[in-house]
Image 1 (cartoon, each protein chain N blue to C red):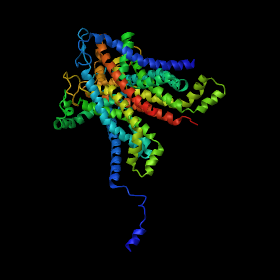
Image 2: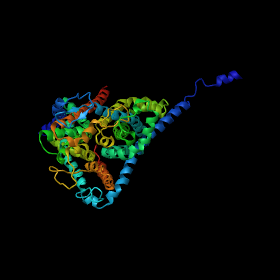
Image 3: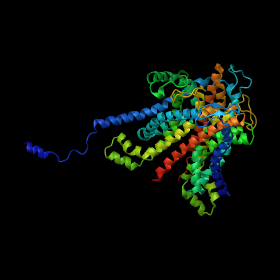
Length: 301
Length: 303
């Protein structure tokens, strides 16, 4: 009986993930059929009138992917550095305390990061953002976006806050892998007279590369789905198409859903947001599955 | 004379050569960079914590903060407190934990004790991984589409708990799984040798051995979901009054209180927002601390 119960719970979890996909799809279908424009290639978003639904994921998808990618670009090298610091450089006695400090970052709720990003970091970043915009504006990523740089509610600010939030995730996984670098390899390198950096380059990094990449993918998954911090930071609808710059604003898929949750008063309107949620679900599913695949294919060798 | 010197020279160069300047420089540069990375991560942490502590302290020092709600308090009055939201956060966290813990532990037991190595266990592990990565907003939409759209229930704190459940189950599974794997096989075999059935071995021997680790995992999970905001935005309606019933009516929790009050332009709104932020951090720290204490006091007995 106990075995059955345990098996049943396992089955429940598997069914759950299938149910998420199926129910989201079921609820999204009627709205997608009522949609007057193409869901995948349009950027419009007017869902107030059930008889005239016009919604497309394009702009939201750009902001979502751009913010997450920017955050990842910032967080990856720093996370690598921290993982190396914690496993190879920090004195053994202090390493645990330092690791605990990094884990504390993960304990701070995202809404608090959001509030901090909105009221403290955003304004503090405005001079940097303006400098980048005036001096490097010829580079597409730093050109004028569709919202005011002065407001701070840009992909630029949001990406930096997100980078801080995903740092502990990437660090934790990378650190775990680095710690498992075979001792004899490290000692072998040392015996050949390698400096500490050479030891890392020749043993730790090659050994931990797969774990590092998969940890980064998990961080990316987290960044794509982050809601409330971006809901607070990104300034609301500008109504203009994004310029493919870091100084675009508007909303990510998740923050758009959170922003308009109060509008869920009829099934067709809500269905539009559920359709967007489904895209997000598929996106994070693929990223997480990829992360897992990297880990298993590596350990399979 | 000169030929003699030539002969006296050792045939081999010395075995140990000094490290060239280039290699030394590279090594030093790496050390500096890596240490800098750590500092870079600490800056935002200290900055965030300092911001929250300095801005939130004022509210927390008022006695009303812990004992009153915001019912009937005007937007510009520095009165009332967060009792309703603190109650909501803790109640929702506990209800979620009460449902999530048995399911999560059972899945963990299945993965380690029964299913190890089978195809279905691999599928389950994979789904748990995916569930870990499901964004909270997607979990909220799922609960919305099933619980509210299809079953026709109204928005309530319980609906929020259901969404939090989806986020907490994988965390409990993970920590249970990890802890059960650490339990030495000799303990199980000794129990079987005494003729004790498998289920009883698990309940009486394996679980008690791993319990402290599981409790730690659960505490960390609760701390994590108490800061979740996205599901509350979709599945709950905020109420400034105290509501003890999680199944009926509107209810508050700390993140929702922050979302409501940060748009309040008055000084009181600022105080309430950051006061709630500090309270939330304190509650989460308390749970984290309790988790650390539990694991310190009763570390898994491996021998």
